[in-house]
Amino acid sequence: MKNIFAIGLDIGGSHITAGVIAVNDMKLLEPSLYKESFDSNLKADQVMDIWERAIRTSWKNSGVEEFSGISVCMPGPFDYVNGVCWIKGQTKYEHFYGLDVRKLIQDRLDLSYDFPVLFENDADSFGKGEVFKNMGNRSMKVMAVTLGTGLGACFIDKGEAITTGNKVPADGELYNSPYKEGIAEDYISARGLIARYQQLSGCKIDSGLEIFTLATAGDAWAIEAFRNLGEDLAAVVTPWLKIFRADSFIIGGKIANSSAFFLPAFEEKLKKEDCQVPVLISSDNEIAALLGATTLIYKEYFAEN
Image 1: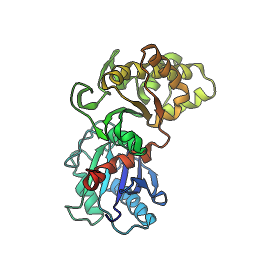
Image 2: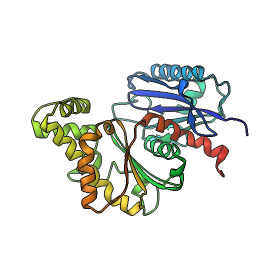
Image 3: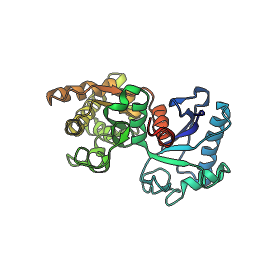
């Protein structure tokens, strides 16, 4: 079979990462990797200018002439089958509500409307990407979470995201699980970390990065806030690690970069619950997301392999 190439996009609330993937062996062409930060609350045309620039730059730098599709890792709420954005009231993509994102991309790149532009949930993309990075993982059960502005989760069995059945939470999601005085995402996210720090210290703070900086400098309240996050994460995921019978647990997202401050408390709580699952911290969330989204195209050509 000839070599198949696809453009992968990891689109977040404040960034886009583009890269060309050699689909046959699911490898990123390193020269094609392009990243850009931006404000997703710009008008839709302005956001599309940025997306188009990222795609065309990645394409040009790859040296590849022909593509078999575009795979997009996108946050929700989103209609991943039809490519329609339903994000509203989340301080991101405020001007995209109800827009056909597939058609927007096809129009910008002068593609026919039958050219494959496929969409995948951001947490599922991350989880699948982590599995596909290591061939040995493709026969395993992997649970993964992304810690950032929100709490993303996925349950992967033999390379497929599991969203139904009694072995996973409803829709494979954890963010809305009842927890303490609200839901899990109220505590296990950047806003949860900020709220906990402010509760402990009485000081107002604007970002999780500031808390990381304070923790690095030895601030006791910042260190405690991260420790609490680790305990909360363990409390939420441990029952599902057992029910799903996961072979490994992977943590990604921006907050994963602060694992030195929350991982010890997380692992200590897992140990107390007699949950002996290997825990891994992802070192390249964005590349994992690109690979994960591209599994949609991989399946089209190599589903039986």
